[in-house]
Length: 210
Image (cartoon, rainbow, N blue to C red; front, side, top):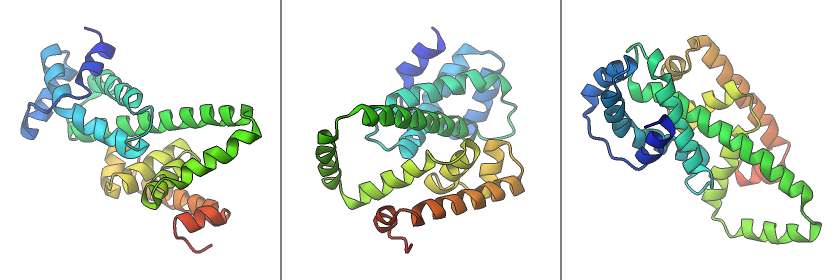
């Protein structure tokens, strides 16, 4: 079975292996053991899918697509696994990158649609936005801001703020030095602060004083 089919089947799978066995399974999978790869995927798939949903938003239309990309990417990256980190942590950065890539792709596609839309269709779109709860709108606004960051800063902020990873965990999972992670967080926050302050509506939505 190819990776794409295997990943697609396992998106909704439940974990079968206890956490203590994941590292060993990952090492066996990295060595080419297909049975170990299947067991490992069944164990980590729900966690990686949850990460994708956290970054994209559960209602995003491309959640399933991003989840499949994340699982395929995880399988393809297994030969490089050396056992120096938790397999879920190893897959977390892959899932974050897949989700961010899908978000950017979807945003580009949406911008093209909006550019082609007739102006009389825009008020209806604005009305639909007012029907969404403030909490949901704030979360989506924060996710959308990730699209405006350089890739390294976006994935760092997603890991640090959206997923709650420590700076040390971000450094391990991105392969970047700790000081580099700190710099990326600082630059990303500065960039986001300027972006929010330049948009009174966005500042109001996020409850930030401009």
